[in-house]
Image 1 (cartoon, rainbow, N blue to C red):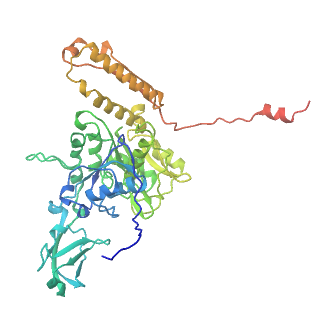
Image 2 (image 1 turned 90 degrees about the horizontal axis):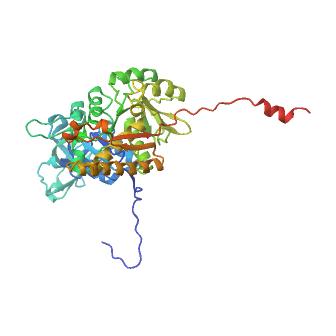
Image 3 (image 1 turned 30 degrees about the vertical axis):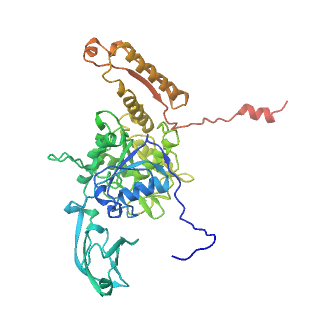
Length: 481
């Protein structure tokens, strides 16, 4: 170390801005991650990882711009590099203990240059490296930016060798299938994997999922069928929403006129789902739309006091293009987006002085016109309010079912609802205990029912200006005596 005497300055790289936080749109994201770059790869498999920053995400599951192989990184980028919103929950299913998910790299001779071996295998799990004539104590290994591994030799004997033999195990993202994303429950151990892990979010983290997504996977019918079912069965009560991508290639739709058929083929019809087409890009990076739309939705909620009453439609997407999977630009105008996509329950993006998310309908539209199931913002407000009710009054369960208990629930919830109305979150909100909904048979069974009437505002999707020539004004201005 240099001898210092005097006054010195040091500089460090600029930190990312602290993300804006909100949990109404809490994203639970399923996919594959470069866990060979994670702080603890073994702990990053089929385990929900709650992260509040880009740094935490990288430590938890790793990060790579290779979005095709490592699909979770799309959401990490969208949330922390584009919208800067947190927290998110990441679930990686790429499992080095599964033979189909790894490649065994046989021993090969590698040159030693200045005491360093450059090992060109990608996605290497460093704890599997085996260097002939070396052991864990006489070399250090680290991943390079190009994906290779630099093995720095520490012993004199190893440094003097012209070459050494190296073997390893690499991750094989292409070995992951839709079945791995859907997951299941092991009959003998009870271990849950894939989307089955959604059940663990509230018991282990104390947080209620807001959005379920699997960018890079939800465009396949096998995966697309699972999230809508999960939105209504989480822990036996809370509801949430999910995002489904319509494939922007020959397996789905490469022209906007084919999107309706592709949506139907995908089976996207749940009021708890949003169907999205096409893909989006930021510079050279291509994202499945669900990753960017989820980040935008969470960002919109967080900027509205963490209350999901406003639609993310017509909000800045912070993208540079809408594209097909092969990178071909898609240039939709407003009429195409309206008449073909929005009219068939598909959310898209248009360039109107900058790219905007465009569409308010859930995937259930046009099959349903019930406002609570048609409108994305209304559906999410219903779910959010219902989940809050469950969490607020769970403490009342098993208490004596007397008038005081009933009145406390009704009064408390009406106060909460009045606050929503006063803040313009909704047009109306009231809770009643009705005798016709509480017959004595229900009371004897310990079943109490309250009835909530709520009216979240409908998005002002269509604003019309009726214009008429004012003849009287012309006559007044230039008419004669």
